[in-house]
Amino acid sequence: MPVHLVDQYHDAACRINPALLENRALLLLDLLQCREQVFSLVLVDDSAMAEYNHRYRKKNTPTNVLSFPARDGDEQFPGQGAELGDVLISVDTAKVEARRENKSIHHRLTELIIHGLLHLLGYDHERSEQEALAMWDREQELFRQLRHKTNSSIERRTMPHLAINVDHVATVRQARGITEPDPVLAAGICELAGAEGIVVHLREDRRHIQDRDVLLLRQTVKTKLNLEMGAAKEIINIALDLKPDMITLVPEKRKELTTEGGLDIIAGEKKLAKTIQKMSKAGIPVSIFIDPDAAQIEAAVDVGATFVELHTGRYCDATSEKERDLEFRLIEQSAELAFESGLRVNAGHGLDYLTTGRIAALPTIEELSIGHAVISRAVLVGLDQAVREMLAIVRRPFPGQ
Ligand code: PXP
Image (cartoon, rainbow, N blue to C red; front, side):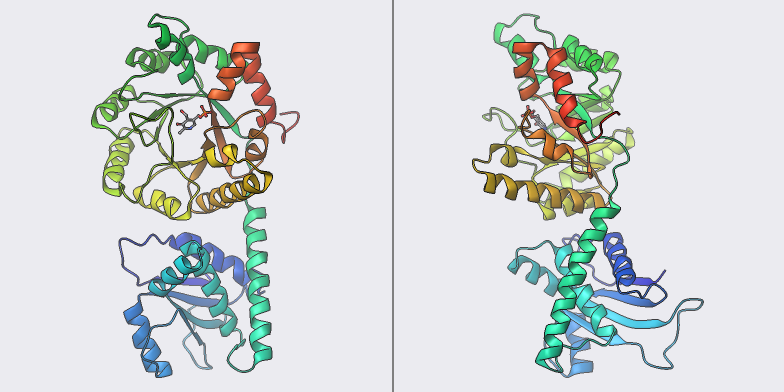
């Protein structure tokens, strides 16, 4: 392996994804045409970095990155190409810088890897202003090229799936307190129209979907049943008995009309990790509904989620094109980070016949979970047609499939 990643940073509260950094370092070696060379990437904390900085540069403070180019006669990794040297990065300092610059920790660490690698290759911003400018330009260019490379290496293997949330069929039924309309029947119609999954949220207050619904859906859904739920003991036990094809953990508040924000994984990490362990033992994959936020994605990896579902609500609710573009970029970048971190990525909430197309075209997104827009349209044109119209939008980038 041309990159030797040595992780000496041991802070349980910090979510670093070594595989992601290693992958980016490899792509950088490619971009620098150093594929045949090797280097070590060492992650340390501030106190270790302060020692190195004192020993080699006579400075008494930590720093973000130190590079040690290989010298003639340095030991080579057996059977491998020429040794470039070592890049040491203090994750503590990188974290502070990431926060200050409003970047994800992986974004900042990637910038520091680029900086360190360029030093190994002879760039030095301390020699002159001209060299400092040349190094800065190269860093920016490499970061852009790396983004392009990671984007183009993300290829969709299948078209995105459409999963229909039938909660609101049950909402209409509950308004009358009788048996119609039946969300179980609705789920069957959605599947016949081509939906690839059915989603229901069994709320603790049972305001729409009832226990009877999930039991019947488990028996009748032919595609995939995704049970949305809060991490409450009673509902966890129901899910463990029911064994849906997957669950999506969402925050649940009694007073909300619908799920409001994403789940704060960092705040509830222990409880979530325990819930995920229980589900894993029962063979049930877990998705977590989160806001498009780098720290939450990193936390989702840590707690062992298989999927994240990115909250598209702010993108859908945007009141200007500028705001919508900003929210879209956030979803796009978050989906890339999640995908690169090894998570499978779904998206949903608030998507309608106008906002879905752009999200469906993102190559990192596997499945869209859509409820209100489709059920509302179904009241006017029928459920079969409403699902088919949405499917045409979701599949638009894949004509003929
Ligand atoms: N995803 C999650 C996690 C949700 O809670 C909901 C709403 O139940 C949806 C998707 C679907 O949202 P909408 O009904 O706005 O399409």
